[in-house]
Image (cartoon, rainbow, N blue to C red; front, top):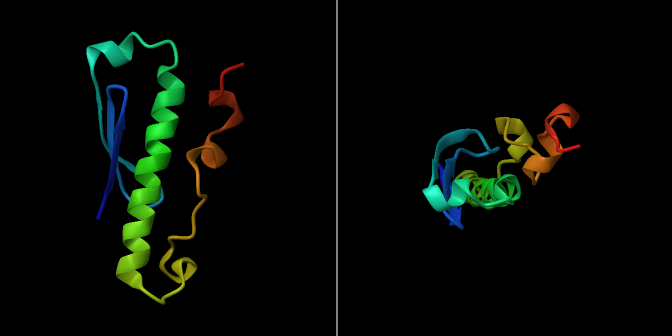
Length: 85
């Protein structure tokens, strides 16, 4: 089960919780000064899609019992050392 999102030449597929399956960047995306921000926005959208699909599939079973209790955004899991200074 995966979630997908795309914007501004960035296309991403992730599993619930945000584990990356695929990332595709166009040439124009590579030239964008806001590429990192775009990638984070797309991964957030794809993760939300994957998480929504997982919640629908598991129904009333609490997500934490299945190990799917995860942050709503990737920013919450990004180490401080990876962030732009």
